[in-house]
Each structure stands twice: as C-alpha cells, then as structure tokens.
Image (cartoon, rainbow, N blue to C red; front, side, top):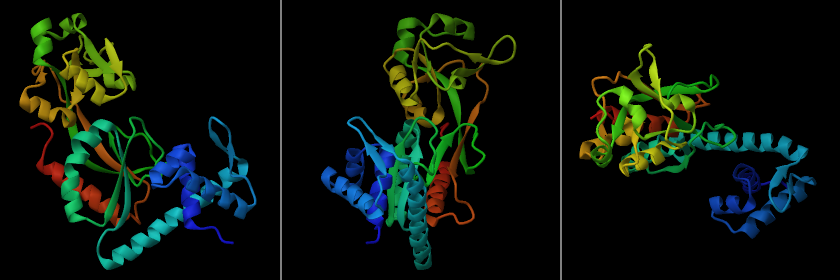
Length: 300
C-alpha cells in the first residue's frame, strides 16, 4: 500500500509542532485521527519513525532520514500546484509567513484586508517567533526580519526601514521628571531587551563617540512587552517607529532627546530560500507590503 500525502503531512506536522496534540489542532483534526494516521504510516514503512514517551516524541534514525525525503516531497507538491496556478494567471495556495510579534501586529495584520481583497485564493498562515527560525525546518515561505541580516544562505528583498527613538509616556514623565541630558538616564527606570544585547544600544552619543549602551531596569525579549510597559508608565524605552507610530500620533508616547538622537534606521527585509523559481504567492505578498509601506512611512 502506497504512502499518502496526508500521512506525510501528518508526520511532518507532528515533528514540527513537537506533539500529536499540537499537530492535530494545527490540522483541525482529532488527536486520535492524527495518531492513527501516524501509526498507519509506520505500518506501511515497517519501521518506527518516532519514539513515544510520556513527555515527548523523538525521531528515530530512520525517522530523521525519512523526514528529509518527506519534506522534499511536500515542497515538490507545493511547487507543482504553484506552477499550475501560474498557468491560470493568479497566485493560489498556502503562504506561510513568519515575523516577530510587534511587526506582525503593527504592520502585517493591518495590511491583510487589502491583500485578501487582491489575492483571495492565497491561504495565509501567520506565525510569530521572536528569534530567528530555520525556514525549511518550519516550512515557512517568507519571513520578515528587522535589522542586519546574518544568514548568507537566504535571499532577501528590502521592503523598507524604520527609525528607532527614545520614548516615554506623559504619565511617567509627570511622576519622575523629563530628562534633558542623556547623562540623567541613569536616574530613571530604563526598559530594555533581555536579548539580543545589541538592542540595548540607544542612538545617543556618549563622550567617546559611541552609542549609549544601557543596562535595563526591566528587561524583556519582546518589543511588544516593552511597548506596553512604557505605555503603563513603567519607564523609558527605545523602540522602532513601526510599532510606535500610533502611540506617537496620539501622544500616548512622546519622544525624548530629539536633538541629541542620531538617525539609526533598522532595515526590514523579506527573506526566503527560493529565488529563481520564486512562487508567485510570495512575490505578490512582498510586492503588496512594499507598495503599501511606501505610501505609509513609519515616521509620520
């Protein structure tokens, strides 16, 4: 009996999500149905793909080898469907997009209505990860990354840039005073990143000419968490314009040290592995973002 695509998809989903339960939820199936599909695949292959314990699942040596082939088959099917869609002249199929939570909430989500109106046959799957992910391992078509790129295996397309500013809420400033000199920051509560440490370099010149590196009073790995803490009046923060535009417009956050701050523009890139055979659904998504963001600058 031949292996089916449903069985391959179930196996890859279990590996990617880390559990049968999570894979079932992702696919909209019952746990028992997903478990039966996985067992049926192992019976057909006459081998154990996953070692099941009470706490987690682990790939066997055979499972790891089969996983590579399974991923390649699923990618080939996606590409075949994409090719046929291109012949019909419209993008179609599932598009898996990854971005950090703040960018997903403040940039991508507001653009979805327009994108869906233009490309109704593209099925979007949006995932948020604060760190860098492996696009192939997570079966991600395109990721939006902010800041300098390090992975040379990726193809990248610039879609814009975003300035960073030092901000605080009027409530915090009313209670603690408004610093007029960067040296006064050491007397204030500073909100910064737990990782990466480079995000705690603020665009203010120290005596030696370098950027000001701060030690956070409260640290978080999430820029969105830092934004909410700043809005709650817990301290001074340095964040990118793309996530604070509406806060600055409404006056919920105000900029500090406007004269002392030098321009630091964070590049924003769409990254993907395929280039010469780039799927039309990826192209239309990146084009839509680039066109729309070009008309809506973050620093308004």
